[in-house]
Image (tube, rainbow, N blue to C red; front, side, top):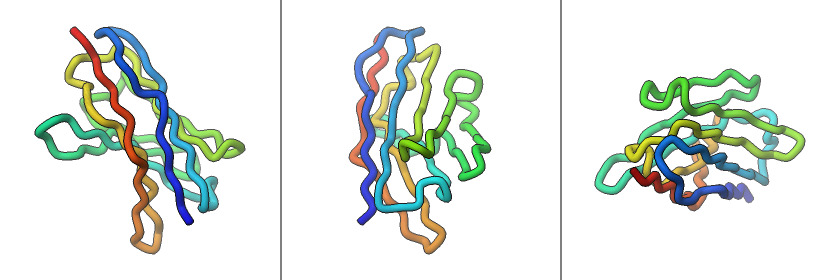
Length: 116
C-alpha cells in the first residue's frame, strides 16, 4: 500500500523560509519521480516542481530561483526548500507520486501561510 505523508508547513513572514518534507512508502522510492503541487483558496491545484528518479528538477516559473526540490533515497523522502516566501505562496502543499502504470498517489497536504 502506497502512503505519502507531508510535513513541515506553518506560518512564516514574507521573506522567510520553510522546508517541507514528504515521506513515501510502499514504493521503490529511488525509482520514482516525485511532484510537489499547491492549491491556494479558490484556485486550481498547480504543479510547483518535479524531481525525477535521477535527480533532475523542474519548477514553475512562479517559484524558480526561490524554491528547491531535493531527495534522500535512503530516507524515502523528498524535500521542498522554500526561500524568499511571498504572501502569494500561501497554499496547501501536496506531494504526489505519479506511477508509470497511471496511478497517482497524494498526501494529505500541509498548510503554508505567508503573512505580509
